[in-house]
Image (cartoon, rainbow, N blue to C red):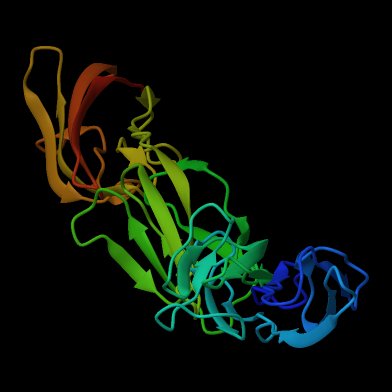
Length: 329
């Protein structure tokens, strides 16, 4: 029985004797003294047989062994640091084949004749090959992880006044051959800009802005920035004015910030409800469009008047404000 594995020791020889006079004695070249010798490595062996009369016969044979079983690997690392797309391709030489096929394994529990092992995470593995005689060889497969690709910094979640300007900014650790895009989550046609790391926004409403970056290997990272919008409606009018022609506080008009698109309507009524002044589609803070304290060309007496204004803001919102004002002369 030849040795089944390279450098194995499971060879065996049996000496069959005929003729002479029993009983027989045996002396092998390895000093064994039985007709059956086992646990032998490959090599040449001889035996001398002596019968009961001292007559002898000799014979010799050789035990063969297969070529050394050798496992070779082709290892591909992961494309992204956290992906599971590494691969090992195993090939082998030597040993003893059955139907020309070896068996391969990552753990010595599950074996397959296919030589490709895909979808592997970054790791260091001892892998195995087995031939038809059960002989094995192993090798270490190091599945390298791709270089990390990550977001270094990003604009923090922010609360701002609507229609103010803010620059959102994100940085990644490696920007070579990286494509980027910004989206407003939940918005139809939400891609806002591409291949930029800064996005200038002038929001009218709160929203979540997402930045996504993809490197040359297809690895993708993203982050979101929550923008809360304060919609303060800053429009009002003074509590009193003095239309005496001194150039100071002579006109009564609506005042507000730059979020106002226009004043659709501004009216002033006397205490009996008579309209004494009206103007439409004017800008805030324009004293020339305010009331000068006259009605039909006549100065009104000191007193309390009621006013009403319809304000249109740049985000399309229309707000009605009202109050009273004291005219002093």
